[in-house]
Image 1 (cartoon, each protein chain N blue to C red):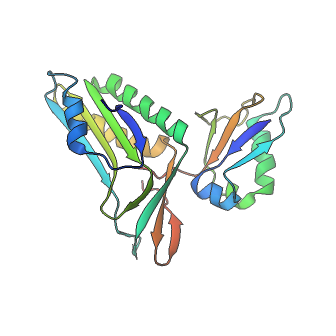
Image 2 (image 1 turned 30 degrees about the vertical axis):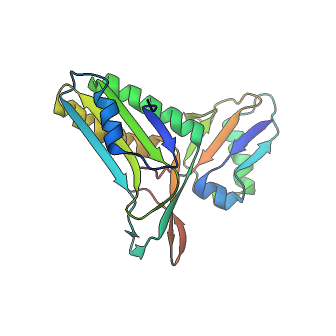
Length: 79
Length: 141
């Protein structure tokens, strides 16, 4: 199982701050993103940053491990 | 003593943060500071309050990395970063950065570097609450 977390403007558009996605062997970040973006197109329009287990990730080919936490995030606006 | 890097809902004291920084070394000859505040007017609208959302664990981890990188990159004697979350009003403090070095140039350059990097790397989002409705802030360059 993959725990997918959302914050701020993305969470508002999803209507939730977390979802669970089924894990399968060989699953990549790209596959997870594509599946979620198809269901939540409006939220994923503003996704420009990703993190896996709290670390910034830019490579969508990254293989995911079971029980990972993945964040799809809009551009930050802190400070 | 309070942690050098913190995310908190309550306000902070600049004097306390600077005193904690100075207390780390008597070799400190220059301290750079940045204070970010909430504006009550933005994009042509009155802003009644600003609320923050954060990926708390990652934001704290990224802020700790920023401090360590700044200390190494600019040869700082120490640095402190405090960011508020929750809800703030116009004029309230949001973020404070203090950098201490032997000389002013390193302290000032490191302070500028930390706030610029924080805006790019730390997962915090602000929403402006206005009489016309709420709006998530689109980051300024």
